[in-house]
Length: 54
Image (cartoon, rainbow, N blue to C red; front, side):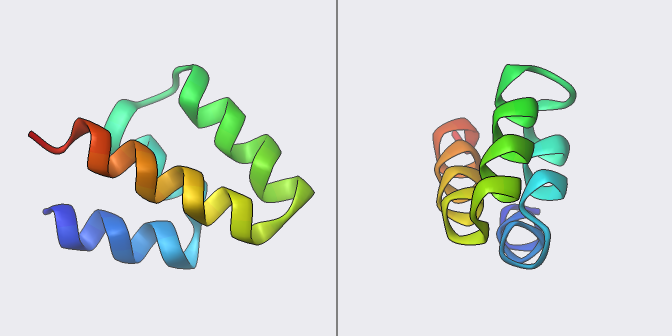
């Protein structure tokens, strides 16, 4: 499942974060980062997925 979330994070970063943490602060932060610049959104999404992948 983690590899699918990482692929989603590359294609559409907020979707990868949503599947990892749901609608929380990290999700809204990722939407803001994606709007401001696509690359920061991807980096944040992969970081959130890696952090929550135990």
